[in-house]
Amino acid sequence: MIYSKEVENMCPVTKGAYHGPAPIPEEGKWVQAKEIKDISGLTHGVGWCAPQQGACKLTLNVKDGIIQEALVETIGCSGMTHSAAMASEILIGKTLLEGLNTDLVCDAINTAYRQLFLQIVYGRTQTAFSEGGLPIGASLEDLGKNLRSQVGTMFATKDKGPRYLEMAEGYVTRVALNKNDEIVGYEFVNLGKLMDLLKAQPELSGKEALDKIRGHYGQWDNAAKYIDPRKE
Image 1 (cartoon, rainbow, N blue to C red):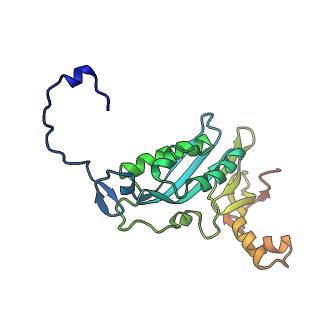
Image 2 (image 1 turned 45 degrees about the vertical axis):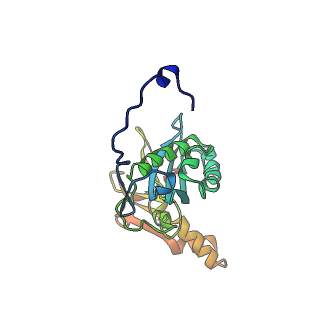
Image 3 (image 1 turned 90 degrees about the vertical axis):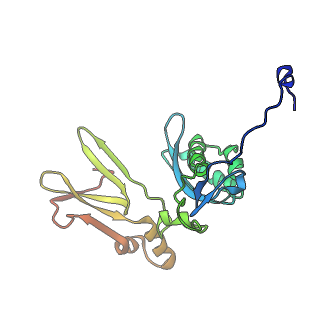
């Protein structure tokens, strides 16, 4: 340790009582976090890249300072999906501090990690008051049983109006309009269910599989007409 001459010439003064850091809530316990191994919790957050072309939703499950689980969801950028693949391999097994100082390839994923780091080290996780936290694999519940990210995609112009392209239920194949050309419902295909069906029954034709899993929402049966939102 190097001290300046001014400090060396100072007389020592005894420091007062040390009470340690303020405790933070972690998985149903109050913890005085002094080292990275004192940190646990599951949480998620969102990050964006500098041109704001795409975004990332990142979920981490940290136990005793080690990242045990990572869910990386991205939207809006094709290259970001490959970055997410790399990040999923990079993050697991690292300490929370290592992850903060790791190049996660995509700026949106880096930004999301920074947001999560702040939540976790300040005791603001989703599991702050959940006794024992959540098991490894808990983030998959956000995806549902088909293990696909929930995505909403809508397009609209002033002259031609809105187009529903993707909803929580799935890929929108047709939109139902009333006599005033207002949207009153839509037809959708859940791609997760479609793939599960085709894997279970490979003998089915594409049309047969689609007919089995196609669904409707809204006033579908009473519509005046139906349009393909991608072509009409």
